[in-house]
Length: 472
Image (tube, rainbow, N blue to C red; front, side, top):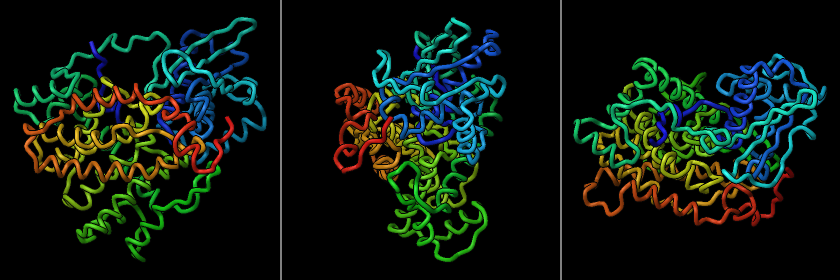
């Protein structure tokens, strides 16, 4: 049985800058300590050591992997932690050289000696972590892998065990289309029935609206915060100045008032295009600043879906309701599951096509659904969006999720909108490429891609623009 994945696995609230390098390691640290606590080992731990391998060791500093690990060891939840206090907590740990595991057990902790960037790679995946706890002379060791999108698996773990039974199981897009046609369902109608295997209808709708509001607030924060991004590249935030130019001197005090002003924008192609870019840049500038974002399906690609959803909400259907937003997110999330199951959503495994490409495909399908497209047109839109991201490399300058990552979210959003427009004006039966085929092609391309183009900062822009990679 293929792994059963919920929409809420593809759309997760967390902290930037990276789902695989920040959110995944954060969750791995939490999981490891909770497992030790269940085994009554936690109270006796005298020391811990964490080793990072592969891509985590090569670009971990720029992706805040070290910060994420420490926050996980403290027991902080990436969904609820106060991000404004992260630096203060780190400063205290580095000064006193001790931390409190899960907020319960004090141990000495010397970051330079106890958190090691090991450089070499473990066999299973490019993002490997080894956690070791010491009690007297005894060691308790676990290995985890951050496989993209905030997902983690333990060494040897079978993720297909204890799977939920779904009314409409579909491992490939063709099966989804068959269910929709046989039962006369939209994709959103089919997906929500599957989601009920995990949670109630009320919980599904409330959860998706929580995701939307997190996206909305993230866009607003990004558009109203100025300055430069952390990390040493001194990248200037651009969403703030774009927002000011587009709105002029109009006054607003919260995101609702701000969105109301945007909705008054006349539908002029150039201005709308600038707003879409502004929305996408805003999210990923927040992401680069350890802000709260929605992993969709990764943090590096977190700006695409909010930008396209804001485009729909502000310009294409100014009377859009919660129902429209829920439909969009259900379809977008479902499309993401196919890439997770059939290929990868990890840039360390597939390059940026696995992040921006997948998010663009998800957004294109979601937009097509709420614009009245058929299930076949939704799949066609996703296929078009991914087709034109094939081969996209991941080459973050200085190991930071900034250049070229932030701008790529704008490109992915625009491609999603274009793909949706093409699909809505097309007959899917005339298409020469299916979504199934493009997913298989993406995975084959990922396997053929040289490793230096997979989130290592050893190739591409990362070595050709005269900026040194941060020391890990």
